[in-house]
Image 1 (cartoon, rainbow, N blue to C red):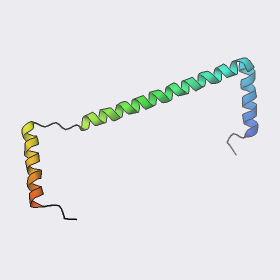
Image 2 (image 1 turned 60 degrees about the vertical axis):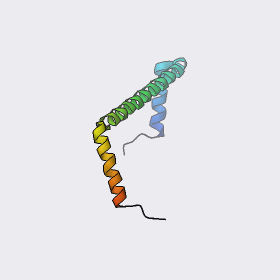
Image 3 (image 1 turned 30 degrees about the vertical axis):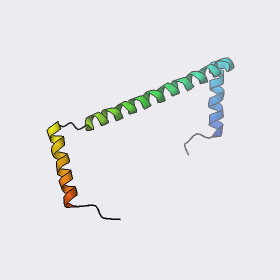
Image 4 (image 1 turned 90 degrees about the vertical axis):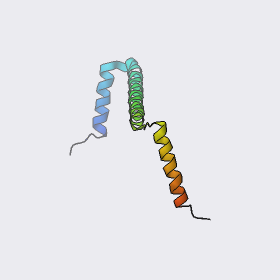
Length: 86
């Protein structure tokens, strides 16, 4: 019950053929393919833009003195906890 089977698809294709004619169907298919390609291109560009925006929001800025303090703290931790010897 429900759903579109093979007989229904054949009827739909025949109706489309009668409406548009055999000469316009290739042009219609080409324009649909181009529209689909443009849509996918637009979607991928917007996803890339959102990814770039997310990266920009995650950027951390600090002053030179903050950077120096962080590096000094890491050096001190490295001296206190030397890496295990292999």
